[in-house]
Amino acid sequence: MTQLWKKNTKIDAKIINFCASEDPHLDSNLIVYDVKASVAHASMLNKIGILNDHELEQLHYYLNEIKKMALAGKFKIKTAEEDCHTAIENYLIRKLGSTGKKIHTARSRNDQVLAALRLYAKDKLSMIANATQQLALTLLNFAQKYEFVPVPGFSHTRKAMPSSIGLWAGAFVESLIDDLALLKAVYNLINQSPLGSASGFGVAMPIDREYTAELLNFAKVQKNTLYVQNSRGKFEAIIIDIVGNIMLDLNKLSTDLIFFSEDSFGYFKLPERFCTGSSLMPHKQNPDVLEIIRAYYKIVLAESFCIKNLIADLLSGYNRDFQLTKAPFIRAIELTSRSLEIMNLVINGLSVNKEKCAKAITKELYATDEVLQLVQQGIPFRTAYKKIARNLDNIKFHDPVSNLKSKKHTGAPGNLQLNTLGDKIAHIRNKKIRH
Image (tube, rainbow, N blue to C red):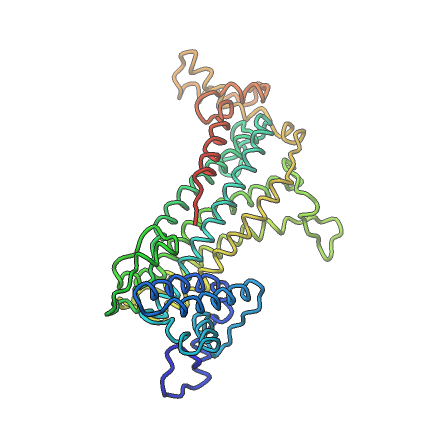
């Protein structure tokens, strides 16, 4: 036996290779998850009397052997086998004969791949959540260290008002905390077992879907068997939209660091070990790592768009088009994980040039503050605005740190409430996504 669907018709090898697409390579990411789902499925078949105890023990033994081989990179999927599901079943049949042939009872390759992808997604979302928490904590420590280091705030890419490194870094901390709330929401959405939906129309056997869901640590069963099939691609796209918000934060963070570490500004200093050079210009230290992270956001965004396009206009039920959602989904997940890891390294190695930051604080940045001082003396805002606008040369230079600390309303530079952000991160770490 080669393909799970093979009967007596001989299929052209070129068609097999074409339809297999990237799956033999991509499924190296899914082997351990399909094994986990197969262990649970076999246990359920034993519970309803399809497998006896000895058969179950044999299947569990060889499934565990496949898992060990996969983790060691020694379980290979042949192109002719198309995917990990076929490769695993073929292995079991070679080892166990007729017992191996029983593993697919009441199961379709459709719900096999859904179960494996769902378990993969839960695992990866947990890892991404942990990495996001760590980056938020690293940025919080950075904000606390440089809380009152003054730096110009920018709007329209022009100097606007006095700001601080603490305000800048704290903004990303809060954004990542919001991202974590979204991650938790999407994790709760996908935390439902598709196993047992078969081809989408149920099976005429007393299978116990609740039992396999419990064994696989899903919160519940995804009930409607047709919706299980229709959710393929939809759930993946939702996940990528959520991790895309994290990548959007990393994109903006990268842009800021590239811009403000440039020599003309010099507010930040990137570690030399993170910078690449030029093949022509000996003096160059290029922020390639940040440019790549910045660009990865656009790739992740494109992968979400790709998945949504692939699943649009399809009749309810399984369609082979779904297979092509696997590659963009896995790529987006892996790019996000790698980007978070690298950005955490960058922030840990980042330093601030306090002298250049202070030098960049010029007196026109205090124009708005002087308008508001006049307002507090009883002058109407618009009158005060025009008065200061006519006399910009007469704006006084203020002590920047005192100026920052004078702004005490919630969230202003003088009242960032960084400790409360630390409490939120600690709460999230205690209530972290578990799989």
